[in-house]
Amino acid sequence: MHSLKWFNIMIVCFISLQLACTNVNDSEKGKKSVYVKSSINYKGKFRKGHIRKPVSTDKNAIKNRNKSKYYYKTRGKYMRKKK
Image (tube, rainbow, N blue to C red; front, side):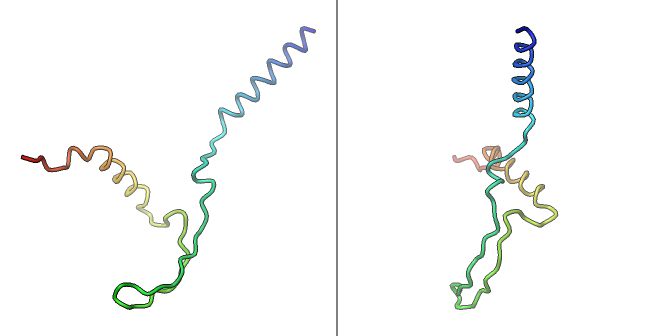
């Protein structure tokens, strides 16, 4: 009886450890490439259709994203004061 109780405790610990260690981001999990249809812009020029990637391939993408986050979180510092 005592070993069964110990076994149940070990199972619960193992499951909770597995759940704590999983690093699944649901917002990125569903991202897929999207096809952008060809169109005509406001100047009348033809725009070719292309595939838009879910993640930027630019080498500075992470740096730019962090700068943007910082700006919008602290934009009170950068806005001009109204007189």
